[in-house]
Length: 448
Figure 1 (tube, rainbow, N blue to C red):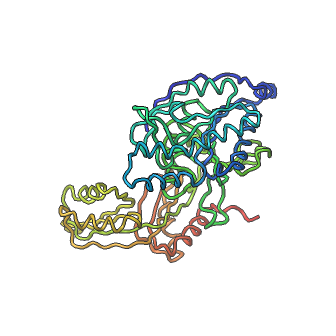
Figure 2 (cartoon, rainbow, N blue to C red):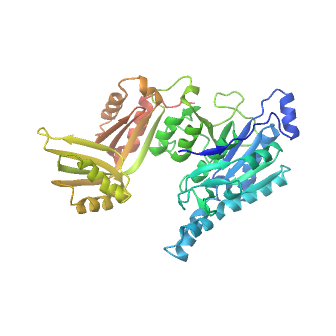
Figure 3 (cartoon, rainbow, N blue to C red):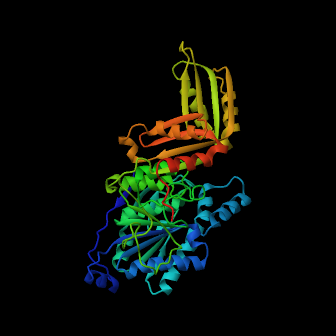
C-alpha cells in the first residue's frame, strides 16, 4: 500500500501545563493516536469512558489525536436505509449517507472532551484532508495532509477525526470499506509522526488463541507485524488486515488494549512494570525472544472442492482460478496432484461455505476446463499455527501433524508458508484440535 504523507514537524514541547510538568519529572512526551471502535463508542456513556483514556494521556503530558468509528450498529443501519431507498443506488450518495455515522461520534467525542476541559474539535475526513482514490465504498487512502492536525496538536488541542472516510480527487466523500477505521487511524499516526497508535476495543490484547475455546489462552506481550497479518488473515478478528499491512509498511507501532479498563488505574505493562497495557504489534527486531509458535487460529465454514482428472496442460490452473476470480470468489488453500503418467491432475482448493454453490456452478459452466469429475463438501475447519520462530526451527509441521494424529484427527489438506502451517479438518474436531495444539506448543498459561 503506497501512501503519501505531508511531513510535519515534531515539537519538543506542547502548550499544555501537563507537558511541562512531565518534562520536569523526567517523563518523555509522546505523540499518540487513540482509535476507538464501535463498541467503545456505542452510546454517550461509553464515549465518556473513552474520553477519560484521552484525558489520561493529556494529563501525562502527551499529545493526542483521536480517530473514531460510528456507534455500534449505526453503519449497518445506514447501509440498510440506502438499500431500502433504492436497491441500485449511486455509490457516491451511499458514501455520503454511510459516512454520517462517524461524524456523529466525532462531534460527540469533541463535546465530551471539551466539557472535561480538554480543547478539542472534530474533523471529517475531507477536512483533514484524508485523500483517497474514487472507488466509492471501498476507497484506498492515497495521502494525508497533516498540517492542520500538527498545528492543533502543537497548540494543545485534541483533534477528533472521523475514521472510515476521506475525500476523492473530485471532492466527494468516500468510505474505505471493511477495516476502514483502523486503517484511518494507522494512516493518521504515520502522517503526524506518532510514537504509537493505540487501538481501543472490547478485548485487552491479542491472545494466543480464542479464549472462548481455550480458557488458558495467554495475552501476548508483543507480536510481530507479520504474525499479526497471518493471524488476521486466518480468522483472528482483533485487527483488520489492511490496517496491519499499512502499519508494517509505515513502521507504525500498534497497541491493542481495552476501552473498558479503568483509565485512572496505574498503567501497568504486560511484564508487571509501569508501562502501556495490552499487546504491542511491532517490528520483529523489537521482539527479543521469538516463540517457535506464537498462536493457534481457527477459521470455520471452509468448503473443499476437488476437480479430478483435469487435463494437465499449460494454463489449466489459470483457467480454473481465473474463472473463479471473474466471479469474485476468494480461493484459499490449493493443492495439486499430478498422475504418474503426467496426463491428468487433481486440483483441490477451499472457498468459504457461502461461496461453495456459486463456485460449483461457475466451474460447471466453464467449457474451457476439461475434467472428469467435480467433488466437494462444506463444513470444514482450517487450523493454523503461526510464529516467526518457525523460520529457524525445522520440524514444526511434522510435530503439528503428530499432535493431531495423537487425537485421532484426520488432515484433509495442508498448506505452509515461512511462518505458518495450516490444515483443513472436519469441523467436529475443530475445538479439540485448537486445544491440543495450544497445549502441545506450550502456549497455555500456568494454572493459578
